[in-house]
Length: 143
Image (tube, rainbow, N blue to C red; front, side, top):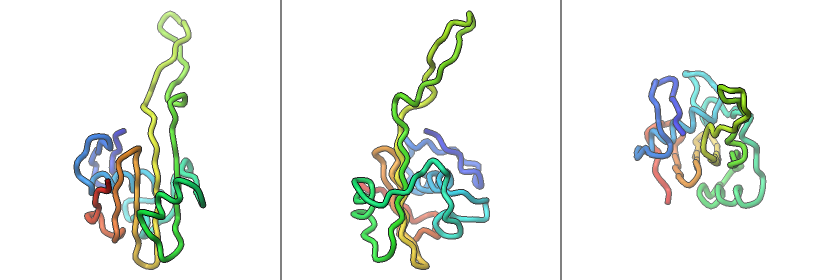
């Protein structure tokens, strides 16, 4: 999946980039709603509606292990499964066809905030964390 960071006009391929800062900032730009003057998990905490809050279970515990919160942990999740990657269409002879428009993926977005914040993203199996989320250059890869 490729995401364009609108303020920087930079395209980031989440499957191939080796730059943790590009990866984290692309996901921040994609997941948080705001304008170029706002920073997700710092000056805006509004998320795209596809991400649903998780308050318990496997995804919540994953984020809790990574962030180890002292304050309230906010965890959100979205998963696009294989069957939803296909659309119905007609070929040039008007015969019904199915076309795959993307690959399945999963996003986990989690943060803790107390004036300073820690922000975590997982895109499928790739993970990053930023322990000072007001900065766009503090991202590190997690295994």
